[in-house]
Image (cartoon, rainbow, N blue to C red; front, side, top):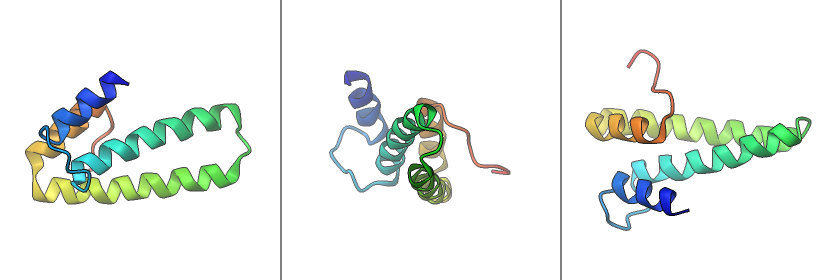
Length: 89
């Protein structure tokens, strides 16, 4: 848990702004990893699968917004969370 807190603080600049796009991308990534591990043990849970797709779509929209507004922070977030970047950007 301490690793998650330190990554979170480094992404959002040390403040407690949970509404920033970088903070939301971090929290969505954490939820995606939890749902992914759940779906590995319950492969036919289609409602959780739909929830995962919705979270991924929301994270993609926030990533696009972050890329357009602050590309350096976007690259930092992608690198620290080790998630794929946007195609063609």
